[in-house]
Amino acid sequence: MTTAHDAVVLAGGAARRLGGVDKPGVRVGGRPLLDRVLAACAGARRTVVVGDPRPTVRPVRWTREERARSGPLAALDAGVTALLPSTDAGTATDGATGTATDGAPEVLLALSADLPFLGDATVRRLLAALDAAPDAEAALFTDPEGRDQPLVAAYRTAPLRRALDGIRRAHQGLDDLPLRLLGERLRPVRVPADPEEPLASFDCDTWEDIATARARIRDHGAVLDEWITAVKTELGIDLDVDTGVLLDLARDAAHGVARPAAPLTTFLVGYAAAKAAGDGTAPAEAVAEASRKAAALAQRWAAEQDEAG
Image (cartoon, rainbow, N blue to C red):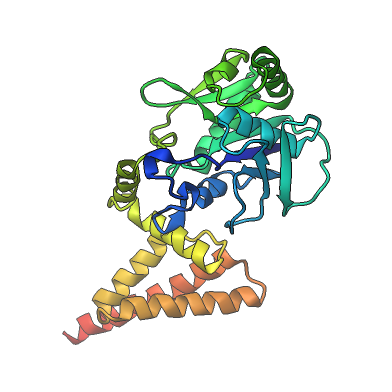
């Protein structure tokens, strides 16, 4: 699969249907929309965000169009130019990831900043689809209704630059032009929605969309993963743990000892795991081992109670 890629995230729209609110900063599941998208494309070598600078979950480079809020084509071109400065279509205003480019990436992700359900699985599928189709110039995500999503896409950099330059010449600029013009100049391979991430292209244009997204992440099947991700982000923890193991431990402690034992036990497991990790054990292994020991203790405790009964 193609691994060397950069990313451009468009976060500078006017958000008119949201009353002009700062849409990238709107929180869904406790995390700003922009941070959710940045987490999905964390594998990019470099990431440029086209919008006004703000604190983000990871360092990015910031840029703006020559005329702010002049449409997605102009914004995409500004992001590409910030990565590979060779045209005068955009001007970089801040750089948190370095200053000089080290050559054109073969592939560039183009993403909107208002996609609360975009995950890295969809990003990987886009990259894999482009890698598997050497004649394709773009991999476009298609929503459940079969519509192309040019801002949930992976592009080969050289054809993308040619297409943008061609549109600029044909229309004397890129301001306020529709994205469909880009698709008309590229040979795409299409990536349909995956059952695991059917809402990857769901975007938040209205307050109703925001309310829908906030309700969906609280669905029973997703709420724990969403909460754990939000907590790890808030605490600055980059650790994958087996939530099933921790939930089983909490259940054993609650049933075999006493209900308040569940949160106290999981806290102590976390403390012990952090101590073991500080001594050189891999963090995930430390959590698993501490959980195993505590679960065995809870089961022994319960067995003694059964014998006494």
